[in-house]
Image (cartoon, rainbow, N blue to C red; front, side, top):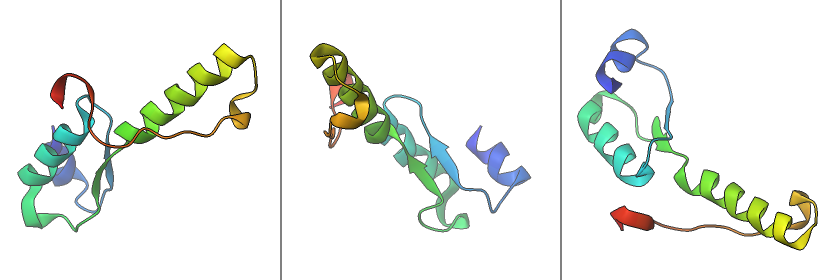
Length: 80
């Protein structure tokens, strides 16, 4: 899919959201190689997981999501 996307829109920035996100992002970047500028292929895995983490904490404490700060950092789960 990534090669088709880059063929149709070579200047596109692509955000990978498929799990395992870090690995899939690295694979996508390797597939497109040097034809795409650094930083154009990126993943949102930790951002998405951080949002889920904050939501779970907020729900368990019965507070608004904006009252909770926390971050997931690095690869985790089955692929770590």
